[in-house]
Length: 174
Image (tube, rainbow, N blue to C red):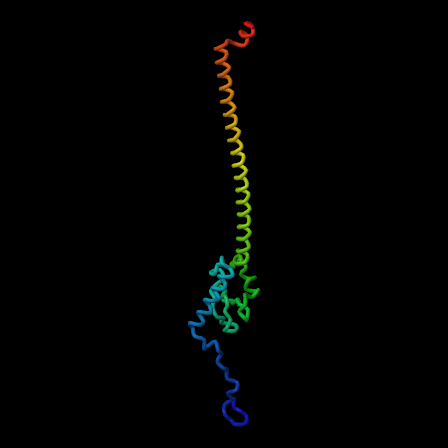
């Protein structure tokens, strides 16, 4: 194309190189790694291999970090402002992502609460068992004490009977 007035080649339609072409490959890899780390922090049990390789888009906006599917498809991962995941990404990979960190924390809190309740119940049962054991020991000591007193009393009766004869004999003598 020629410029109408000057006859020189029209350069106003030449493609302006995009900024993505100037991003250092190390910086690109760093951004991909940060995205993978972000996924792992939000979904600690994620199966990254099931999500597919993560990298810069080859089809759409080349500044977008995407997950590449086995058929060559791309799924954009992050919102434009980088504040979180796109719903389309989390919906598509719901099973591969696993539970979110928030869900895991909530479940852990619930489990801790249940464990505390079980511990409190076990401690209560232990205190009750110790109280019952202490009462039983006290009763056994009392029974043992009464048995000894009974034996001493019987021994005194036997001694008196030997010395003075049986009660019947004493009554007959009187």
